[in-house]
Image 1 (spheres, rainbow, N blue to C red):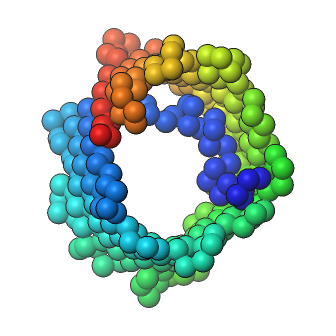
Image 2 (cartoon, helix red, strand yellow; image 1 turned 90 degrees about the vertical axis):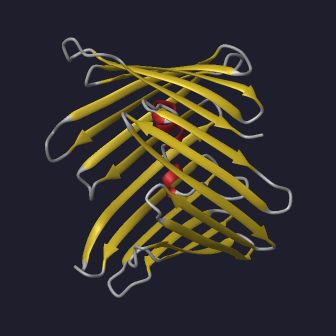
Length: 275
């Protein structure tokens, strides 16, 4: 499987990204300025109704160490220090100010046929999260467990399996501590136009309820793509994205709820610049 299997969160990601990624119904702007000297800069702003939220991030790389610092509109400062201590293994310490309970240690390990991500809070009653995945050829299986040491209870317990080929991908995930089954499928219809279709169905074992979403993506040309989505709730969504320069995107999204009388469509605009 190349350099190793994808982590657990990548199980079902191909369909999930097609159905949800880049849909945005606010006004969003981001500017990323990389640097060959190891210092990078990113600024992001989002306008929701009449409220503006933004943050500024910097990233510094030196040898095996990467330091990320982010300051948001409310003067919260988040810091993350990542160290690659061995091939396939890296550790990260993160914390936020003024949240004194935000300290966390993450350890990531990737082997040829296994990937393990673990996280533990750095305070007296921490949350512990462990996700593991293993794969061979086109099949990947994995699970993730969350444990709250303060209550001695599991916060999450999920498992999944996926089968991936260049022209299609299928995945089944047992989530919400065994109460929900999620099945997804994505199929490449035309390699020439990049046309793909995807479907995701969720079944609640406790409430016997089913939900689903169906979507597609089609490339109008090498720089422009169109996505569509229909959900069980009657919401119709469409997205157009244009890469007007390398790694710089303009995205327009719209959504209409067919089940709400006289409902106005929602529109969103996202501009992402990377000089």
